[in-house]
Amino acid sequence: MDFNDTPSEAKFRAQVRAWLKQHATPKINGVAAKRKLPEAQQLQAAKHWQKKIYDAGWACITWPKAYGGRGGTQMELVIWREEVADYDELDGFFTIGHGMCGPALMAYATEEQKRHLLPRLASGEDVWCQLFSEPGAGSDVAALKTRADPCGNGWKVNGQKVWTSGAHFADYGIVLCRTDPTVPKHQGITFFFIDMKQEGVTAQPIKQADGGAHFNEVFFNDAEIPDIQRLGEVGGGWKGALTVLMSERMAVGSLQATGFPELLSLVQRLPLEDGFAIDNAAVADKLADWYVKHAGLKHTNSRILSAISRGAPPGPEASIGKLVAAPMNQDINSYAVQLLGMNGMVTDPELAEKQAHFQKEMLFAPGIRLAGGTDEVMRNIIAEQVLGMPQDKRDDKDVPFNEVPVGV
Image 1: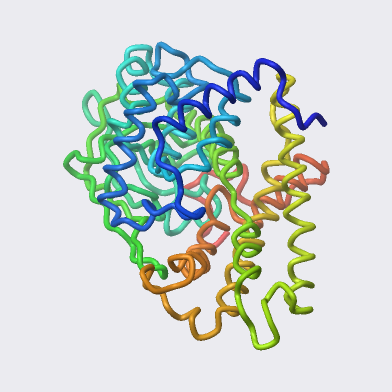
Image 2: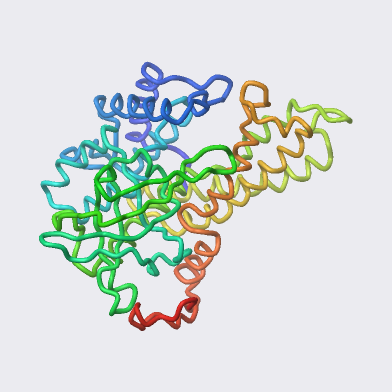
């Protein structure tokens, strides 16, 4: 494992640092103030920033230049993410589009569609969402029931999706639909993209515990999709779904927070009855446990970076990292709120410690454990794909979908 940049990587990092220093907004005392703005203002700030980096040639670094990218390496993308993390710029609105929808379009869209849609996505002109999860499917994406029935030269879609991040402001979405219920569930799915502003598509934000409404229910009521918006073969949607899900785990895993640096900063100056929190034996014991996990994740990530730098594909570490980091993030933020005592109940950013960072993160953390695959899904991936353990028995695997008993 090599912690140092190669000469070419060091040169690229220096270029990134110089450009960001001149054009990006630094954080103030480590706080990203733009993240506290109302969502509409955040979206406009994110679009402005995305257009700026697109015009300067820093957007979607690994994408081909013909599609609006830089034509760079995966390691250059890692370096960009490491450096831009020190600045108060918003890019989360495009994580799904750039990290999940873009790769799907590159794999399955027509060349004309790629040259039209991808530069608009890279420049921030369009926002995309992912329409996979459904109320009755749980973590089993292949159990979806949203139907796409042939209609003239296209398809008519009816059904419901849920937990769709950003659907209420998205311009387009990638969607999985059941096109043949008479075959086993994985075989009867087809992959499409859809205009989120068209007739027959309704997004309803879901109010969250942290006060936001980032997730949505999405309803399709006779929404018509031309066949040209089909991605891949009819009935071949599961292959496309796997492309997106693998991209999702890499995108989510690369952004996974542990909460440890923020907690360490807090306890160094938080007074308790017997002195500063960091000098308290119980607090120190917690810090030691979390430091070990944080350091382990840091060096595991270094293994990923070393592999990428050598040109090798990332291994299973992304699933391991998410399985450790997401629960850790939830535990740390909950503990920080407890340490704050009565002040932990204050959620007004103007009054609360660190602009109510820990309060907001504590309420949002359970959702992070679901995004990109639940803890149970991550354990199954590690068990089956890393340890080589046998798959769970699945009684519905070879049964036509319309014959699967409810509850199986």
